[in-house]
Image (cartoon, one colour):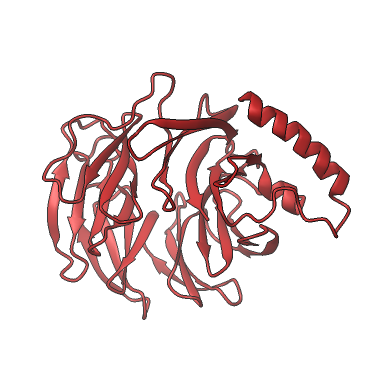
Length: 345
């Protein structure tokens, strides 16, 4: 932990203890709108998942922000978080729930329960959202949520669904441990088609032209050669496939900048970048680290800063380092246990 962060957290803990019973005083972290959030998975079965908040304006870091606001722990395996319509939806995988909080204060507004190991949340409109799930030994389904009541209204059999994106009124769902990508009509919730893709599509993005990009790792047992592909959302045809040279590459965490013209992903613990107009995968990594192997990746839409995480030994607290657009480092800070995904408010 750096000295600036350590000193600030000591002062903050004293201030928080002094004012937590005084409802007239605002919290010392203030409005959480202009913040970056690190989703710390925590150890499986230990319920020590957490959120770390980082102010864009001051650079101050708040670990365990959800617990500090709500006085209870977030849960077991904090998987992902999505901001929508003034709320944040925090997906807690092994606790089988989604915590719903106010996007500015992070005060709890409810819990969506009954989900079989949820993974990712995709808002369709202000009334409805899709949630992918993962279960072992049972038929895995995609859950449809009524955002007015926070209740599950319908399920769609999918298999292990991972990330989702929406383009041209269609939802694209990557199905892990398969060659499938499911396409669903966002208006009717009907499955339109199941596309054949490279094995185990783990992450998806939509570029500035509305094209869907799918990154597949090829499977745990190298069932296929990893590949990145571009799909036309209107014709549902694959337009281009970029095949990795190494079957053990295991690329993951596909991300895109705010203007939708540059893709980022992790391969072999390093950050790689390519333009959506490139005709080949990059030859060299964009960001490397001698001290760590990157575990998480996110691109801040406010300024294109590149956030990476290091899960360390997957038992103790990990760290985050973030970089400028040109790949030069800006700063590092300590996060929680197994910092994985990032979310930007």
